[in-house]
Image (cartoon, rainbow, N blue to C red):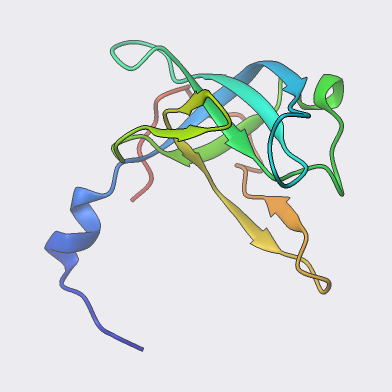
Length: 112
């Protein structure tokens, strides 16, 4: 495992946000869901594509808080601009399980 300096970690902006919209993304090569996440204040609503279809359905994601990296450059996925990287962990079969606060926190709060 490569080690990094704490200063490197500080460059990664991991913020809490609330999913305000979620839609199926049938155009993606791998099954995915389009998410719109509100990070509040200066960041606002950003969109993302996430391979969450094993454990989640779009309408059940609305209102859920998630953690995401908000300072990566945008990526185009099947014509959709993914502006943030929503974070998750693999379950025992490799399917994505979202990382989220267990208590509601202010949108835009930075992980430290």
